[in-house]
Amino acid sequence: MKRWWAWCLALLVTVAHAGAYEDFFKAVAMDDGSTLLTLLVRGFDPNARDESGQVALLLSLREGSFKAAEALMKSPQLQVDLANPAGETPLMMAALKGHGDWVERLVERGAQLNRPGWSPLHYAATGPEPAIVRWMLDRGAAINARSPNGTTPLMMAARYGNEDAAVLLLARGADARLRNERNLGAGDFARMAGRDRLGEQLDAAAR
Image (cartoon, rainbow, N blue to C red; front, side):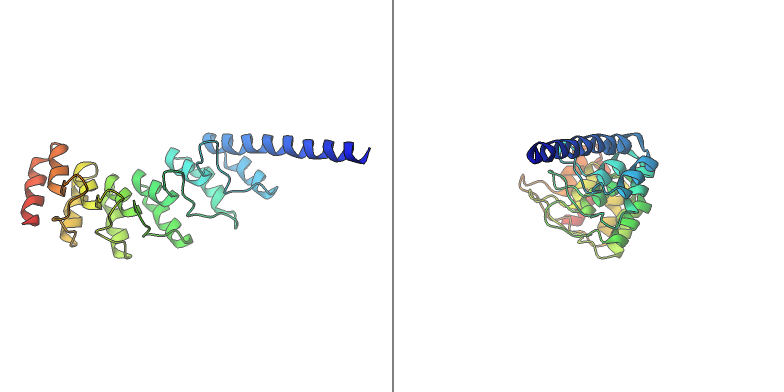
């Protein structure tokens, strides 16, 4: 009889957790900060991952669910630097999306500006806001950080980001001579995006 009751209790706990899990990620998607706060107060883990391995804070910043992000940031248990399976952190996502205020808040909370492989500066350089690139550089972000295939923030800015970010990186000392594993330099990246004038400027800096 005791075993039967123990099994029933375990089943109820499992069902309750499953329901809370669904409610948690639904609240993130719907930007429902109130529901998230309720779940967190009840003890739900703010660092839980969805079925694809994404953490809630990264999802919130990716989707612009700022009420959800605010709720998550209120949790003392929140780990702000958890990475998804692709190695992306909430800071990287905030930088990519141009959320400068969140970039600052995350770094203040302990998010790391420098990390092996793709770095937050790569993501900032790819994004729309040169001001975030400048802010990161002012706080010690490695300007010539190399991705696993040798790509630098300058290369990313030259092809994907704001052209002003590429000019800023160059002015702050980014090395335009560096090349990635495909033997492509920042000038090549610029030309692949049809930015021929920028490509010429980067080639001149590489001489």
